[in-house]
Image (cartoon, rainbow, N blue to C red):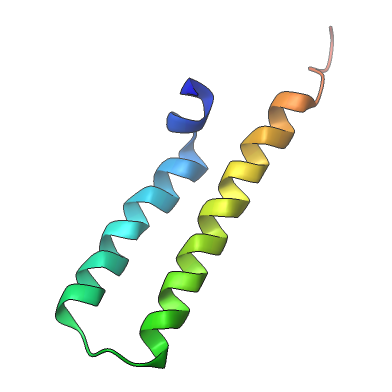
Length: 62
């Protein structure tokens, strides 16, 4: 679990989620808001998938 929480990609995706939440609270409710949430979810999924793949790959030189 620690490898996911301290990954730069996952941290960046989580931090960008705060902007999406703020836009949801302050902005208009239209199709662009839905796209923002879909984009954020996709970036978080990609970041988590990247960390999972990196842990499966054997280290070079071992």
